[in-house]
Length: 72
Image (tube, rainbow, N blue to C red; front, side):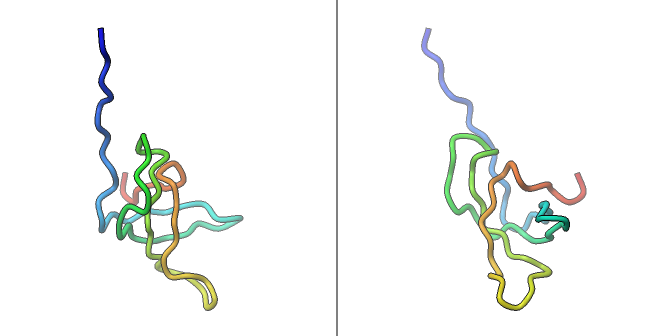
């Protein structure tokens, strides 16, 4: 019997997320998918930081595994 992979949902643009960074928590909004993986956890997302500091990029790339959706 052949098996087929079940599709998975990616985080839609506009989803507010947090992630751990050293001893702090980053806050941002998903602006798109950077690289589609084989699961939601290994898909890479473009995230616009809400609280980035001078010299840091405004948009970061994070795996779905590293992100937590705000409000869930």
